[in-house]
Image (cartoon, rainbow, N blue to C red):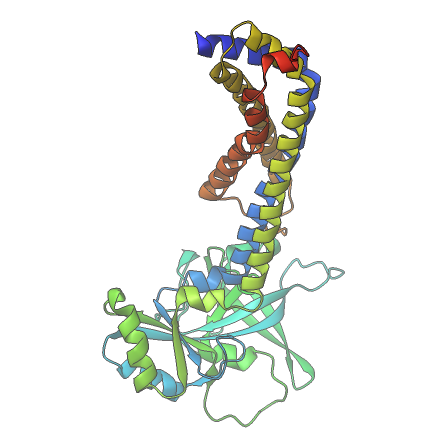
Length: 391
């Protein structure tokens, strides 16, 4: 009986003041839109920074010990690779070199601004080389071949068998290197750029250099991806590698990408913005229902004088709060979906199922949380005092 009466009272008031409640739902919808977009932006920016590193086949990443876990600052040699592969417990290891280049391709608009891509050198057949989703893997360390990620393929319309040209500055002079596309991999962004993958020696030949023939006799690269015989021995292998190979710092893959330049600061900033947005939502809902409560003190007093219990009054208020909040969250989620469908592909926003569900569940909680004060006020209303009959 209490439940049915409270639901009747709640929906009666919602319908009578539908314009007012709908405006609050629209405010909640805007907050929902902002929260979900911030969550998607955080995921998109994180992916743009870490996508390639997070997909590495091996469990550990080896840096130069003085590089402070910065990929571009790390410089390792072939002798270090030989030492790493000899360490007991290492199943395989692959060198990785990174740089940034411009490319030219058939059908490119001559008036278009050149686009920069991450040029990643890998050892074919070893950790670090991404698996292709179409075409073939790289053939050898010196092959003039390239595997492009699907973002590059969409942006340039390049296909397997086409030829792209790497534009690279060598000692202040622009040099051009034609490479044949032999495969396409899935999205492998690195440091906010789509990636193209070439054999390690080819990478060393075509990457930008401050001078031609810089006098280095030994190939250097940035990091090594290590695959373990037993992934459960990760902690022990980190210690073993650092003790048996001189001049290196070893971390797991998660630590490697979390220490990418700006990654932690970027994510903490977005999380702070999300937190403040949710706080604003709590204050908006709480403020609205507190005003609603103050406006109907006399009505609540009359209900209590007629025998309405505190649970009945509280349940009616909770129903209004939850209903208004759910309507706002639903509108906001649908608006987010529609806007996401129309966003350009170059905007780094990625919506994942768990991320959206967590955001929506969090938003559904802000209604009851914001309305706690008004519910507490309602159950404390004295009938005689509310009707002005108290002595």
